[in-house]
Image 1 (cartoon, protein in one colour):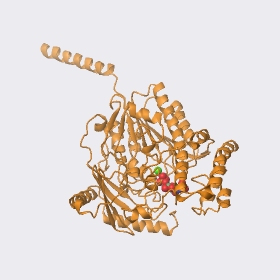
Image 2 (cartoon, helix red, strand yellow):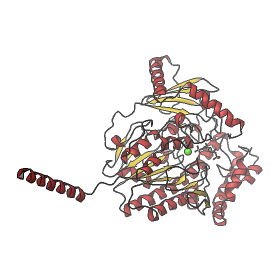
Image 3 (cartoon, helix red, strand yellow):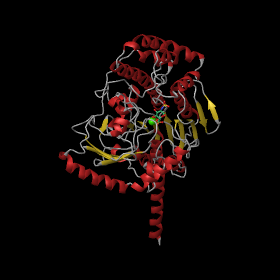
Image 4 (cartoon, protein in one colour):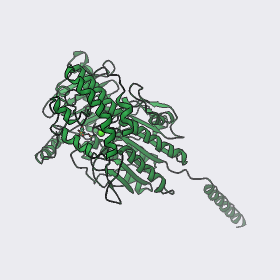
Amino acid sequence: MKKILLLSSLLLGAAALFVSFQKAKPKKRRPNIVFIMSDDHAYQAISAYSNRLTQTPNIDRIAREGMIFNNACVTNSICAPSRAVILTGKHSHLNGKIDNYFPFDTTNVTFPQLLQANGYQTAMFGKLHFGNNPKGFDEFKILPDQGHYYNPDFITKKQGRIKLTGYVTDLITDLTLDWLKNDRDQEKPFFLAYLHKAPHREWLPAERHFRTFIHKTFPEPATLFDNYEGRGRASKEAEMNLLTHMNWAGDSKIFPENIKALGIAESHPYDIRNYNGTVNRMNPEQRKVWDEVYGKMNEAFVKTYPTMTATDKMKWRYQRYMQDYLGCIAAVDEGVGKVLDFLKQNNLEENTIVVYTSDQGFYLGEHGWFDKRFIFDESFKTPLLVKWPGVIKAGSKNAQMVQNLDFAQTFLEAAGVKAPADMQGESLVPIFKGKGKNFRDAAYYHYYEYPSVHMVKRHYGIVTEKYKLVHFYHDIDEWELYDRTNDQNEMKNVYHDPQYAQVRTMLHQKLAALRIKYKDSEALDKMYIEKYKELEKRGAISR
Ligand code: SGN
Ligand code: CA
């Protein structure tokens, strides 16, 4: 009996010691997550990817302290669908938000809801592009739909709709910093979505960047004068050419009176109306700088326009486009710098994952284009830089085909929350830890928004490291195949080239298997075409 008593008191003592040891050892806090996403930010315009066009020292810090992904890509290269894929971890055909017009089905389970239910504080600032009451957020201030660059309105969780004075990128940064400073619950880890509208069309920089960028000249891409020979109808019929489809007033900032005086045909029925809407939102101080800087540019244009050839016009439009587009990015980069500095100065750096990405890539004159939508590289790929001190080795590079589909499961795993079984991505955490070598050997892609603005035909396809097989369908039935090693600019469709017969068969099989794996099908393609027709009938689709 004595022995038993001795043993049990010894055990009790050991247990007490164990408990006190556990108490003494601080439990590792779950990481905070800062998810930074801009709208239409091409990787070609981030200096961590390429120095050719511009410098983005602050965004580059994330790569320097963390990991840069050279083959990150999207599943459907357009704004609202990309966001729906990110939030739900499901392809568009399953989450239902196939294009910018279809409503977002709020019965979808999103990862912020799961983080919130598991003790995370959640907040969103900036552009979401659908829904006015995002689920799973303790706080939000979001732009209605596309939002405005100057003096924008915000839909807020607690104060209804508000209008703020200033430049949109700076305002979104201020709202984000204000929340970090004043509203953060010190007891909880947080998920913070900091979502820029810039550099979306119509590319309006902040006043402080008008002057610096308007005098710069940028190198042209090799395919600026692409005539789309060697490819099918989809490339030829798309309406996103710099020379023929860009708007003179809204995009190139030629004043309406000059458009009329020079006898330039209006590029879009709403161009001048939209342009007037933009400048009328400015306050007198903003307008003064605008008139001064863009006025000088207009004066020079009026003088040279009459003698310009088509080639001159294309070159001129490219420069004008880059000046404003890259001007917008300058403010985004400054904002990112401020948020990174705040984390550093407030002891938040160590335990915070910071992600910088875009909702998709963008054409910066490649193939003569602006906009996105296509499975071709500039819009299929998207920038992705992630830092997570202590987990990701500083300065690492990754070439895996990670997708926006993977964010939900990544963040859930980082937070120690089990992901729902029907999410379709894969967690990037193993890659962060330097593992996950054979991550994904083929990515599936499906774009739907047609017929609509820019007229990019519906298509789905498969992308592997070496090849890209695409099916354009709906009012067309054309297949295209690209050799990604020997034709990096994707200029030549080799689908009918006998040399590629075996590759073609292999890719067809792989694509069919992926369609089954992800539960996509011809029946769904047809269903979405029918639903789209209903929206067209109701006048909901814009051209
Ligand atoms: C607007 C733009 C288009 C752009 C779509 C979708 N025209 O319609 O160029 O493709 O939005 O962009 S604009 O003259 O109104 O700017 S998305 O990023 O929201 O998908
Ligand atoms: Ca976008």
